[in-house]
Length: 494
Image 1: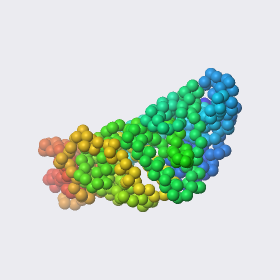
Image 2: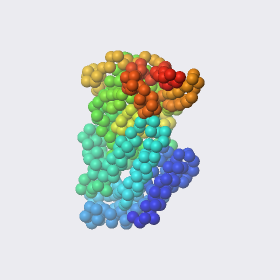
Image 3: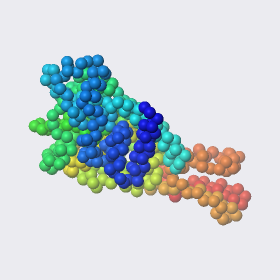
Image 4: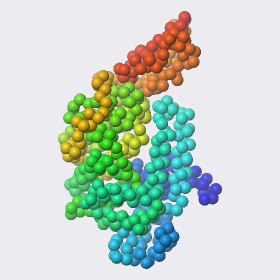
């Protein structure tokens, strides 16, 4: 790749993220995503798929002749000895485009061809993300102790997995072993790391359905979509991680969902899916919950999450709101982000940073399902669909296999919103610093060296003070006051 193209690619990525931040000029946003593909295209797929509907048709990267040349060279075959025909591209996505083809035995197949040099484009975009993460460590994001390196490493790993179509082929084979009635079949002899051939599925895309189907039929489809997703998540432990409009084909009579893209499927451990199911089930039933035990089992950092223990019941009521009543739920009334902001304030970032990359990946997957239901514009009963699987999960076994923190049952209490540090001299306030309450978890690094020295001389350990205070949660109150002649040092949570 020439130097000019490298600079252009970097400039386009910077421009994309700047426009995205300012939330305007959608046309240029989509143009940049279509030009650079990779991460930029995936972002648009997830946040505004409708923007791609009318602009993707004329954005074919490879023409038919180029595709045949790639197939022949990559698979070491003469194309028309194995295939009767190849269509023009019928779909273009983030890392490749799809063609319809007919084998010599008249089998209709789909061939996905990876764009040449798309890996270089993605690596360039990842480098930009890494640079942004390093910059973030020098800004206010550092106060939340978010492990940006691990999250970006997770993104990088997932994207590189998607670039290897052999892994996608294996995902499809594994999915079929869990769902033997599904009809999507792989053709390994015509597949490799950059080419994937699978059976062609006739049906409707969700884009067409939401415009042309009746509300009742859309509701039936939405219920089936959620039911299958829960089956994949809670029973198979293997679910779609990138739920967007282009990853499904729907057929009728009987109504069937065909999952056609297996580039980003995630395996869910028994610990995560069993504890997640238990949390939802017991929140629905209003039963006593071992909150800390289940959050730790899911993968949360116990040393962080326990400080929010008093807010966990209210937090789960927000997160699981669609499940809580036995009636169709209107997703437009959920307002999850605003409600979490109201409950936790800026400390929501501490809560989010306590979950590992695997859990955040799962939440992205579930959020994709929410967006699909929104696109169908129907209300469904999430509770009854979820409870179908209660006989498949051994709740008692799950409880036995995790620690029970008997002294950590939450009591409703308002969380502190701020950490207040004050220095007084001769009874007058000399200095005042107000920070988000979550920074209390890093208290040792916030106290000036001279104060640290005086505390050490008096045998006072900040870690012990912090631990003793946080046994009751991150709640408002006086933490400690250090008196020293005509001055004093105060720390409060307010």
